[in-house]
Length: 193
Image 1 (tube, rainbow, N blue to C red):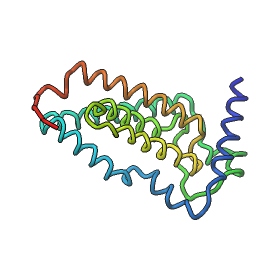
Image 2 (image 1 turned 135 degrees about the vertical axis):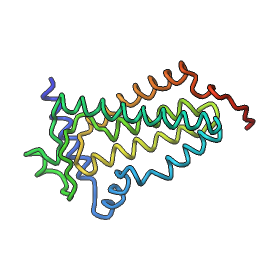
Image 3 (image 1 turned 60 degrees about the vertical axis):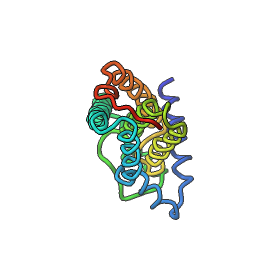
Image 4 (image 1 turned 120 degrees about the horizontal axis):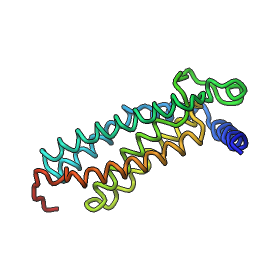
């Protein structure tokens, strides 16, 4: 059963990866770089500070750092437990996917890009959905970020999917922790929108 699932995962990767073309390569390289998303992060921090004030904003920023660090370190624990090679480093697969001068050496399962981006995005959505109705568009970030990893042949679709599931779980968990500790109301500031 597991062998069949991994075979389907590999076939899906090969299919999706081979949909790429040279004219789109730079676009997906741009999207896979965390720093390319800096304007989005700055905008979201602006929304947080605008809604919750400076003291709560700083508290929330520190909480986000803990959230991302936790997600990243948990991902590394899982990767080092399963030790699944990346497709770009796997004999038999590398010959069937597009080649790039980009071959991370860490393990593949599950995707840190998918997990961290979904953890961050889902947490922010839950935090701000009552104030900004269009915040759900933020889900485009992890979807594009995760797909870029398949496009570049550094993750299998299953790596991305499980990363998303872990990200949803951790985003929700950290949202509940934030509510329990009442981080957004510690230094309550009345704001009228």
